Image (cartoon, rainbow over all chains, first blue to last red; front, side, top):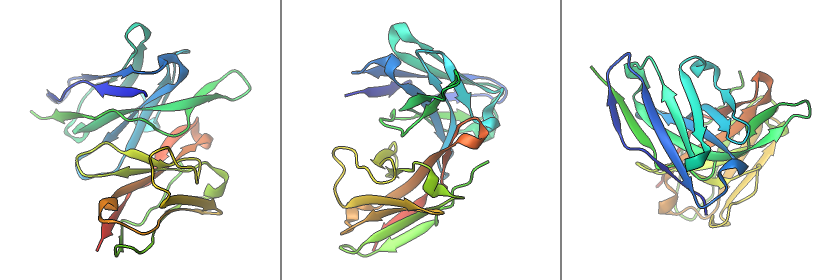
Length: 128
Length: 109
């Protein structure tokens, strides 16, 4: 049974960066993709991007291109999400979630499938 | 970009059937996944691939998908089903990006 455990809450100043971790246990880290989803206070879920650890391939939502970097450390089965140039609007709970991936038949791999399980969430507060 | 539309709220009495819709252009051609989120908790997968249920999810939860609408159906609604529900697909037209619906608050009367 795969479990995803995230790092603790963070308080950051506007303009700074935050790096949230997501450690997987109980499964084969390289067999799946890891996604990051955020939820602003009182709002819905927003997919930020994902990574396929075995290939290092990333997909990002257009909104987060250039400000989000998703990486993995296979030696510790940990995924990371770094968000830079923080603004107050980035105050949210950030979740990691496992999914599958697929090959498009022409050499590219993409994150896909359903999100299960999810990490417990990490609250990031951006405030001066 | 691909847009999923959900009603903000649905209300149903205990024992009745609640239906939560998720609208999208030709959504019937996509795989739709549904999540339940209770206050202060992480989302939980309740239906995947339109109508499959993960282990541990009651048979009362079912899904369908056709045309421009996917539907999550909760039969014999219980107080414990009160939560926010989100649909999710992948938008293959834009370099394969994840898309969530805006969420539906299910209130059990």
